[in-house]
Length: 105
Image (cartoon, rainbow, N blue to C red; front, side, top):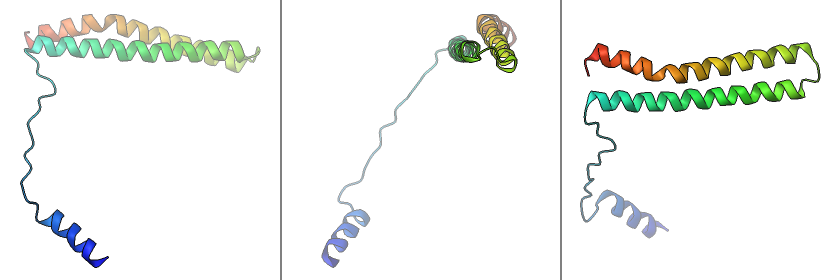
């Protein structure tokens, strides 16, 4: 057992060769315009996804609420949140256009 521990420690402490890591570029943006376009696309996707989740939650609360006024009100608020999310997703290109004007891209 002591021999195995010594071999493992020796292998870890005194490796025969050195390891070299290659530099990997995950993403390169050609310009500020491309970065802002990518931000817009991600923003639209995230907002639309969250709005869809809220729409689904509102629909489930409406269907399974069973006439409970509290659940009906919560479903209305979820529908409002979904509408706001879809509106923001639709306005994301406008926000990026304004940012491009500010940055000068």
